[in-house]
Length: 105
Image 1: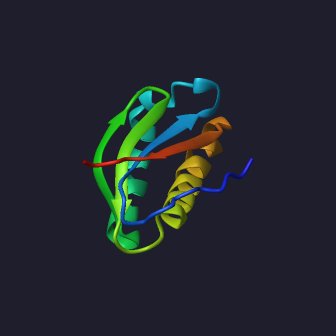
Image 2 (image 1 turned 120 degrees about the vertical axis):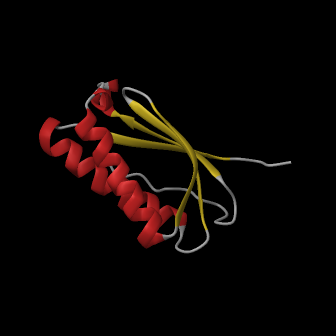
């Protein structure tokens, strides 16, 4: 199921969680962590993604991200689609996405 990524303000930072459908522990395997790192680095270099911090858990990933270039919703859409396709190719896994805006005071 496709989700619309709701990014209200591209100048803000967002807390994002990518989850694996059914909470399958795919990130215990180095090959999937490496795949995530590669797609993340591509988005940093080519799409303007800014990653401030991240935490990879066994079945999901938490990040604080932003951008100063392309719309963040477009970056997340492409990033998630690429990563999901490559993980799903081997394991038929649904890669989901949750976001919330961070307020800095």
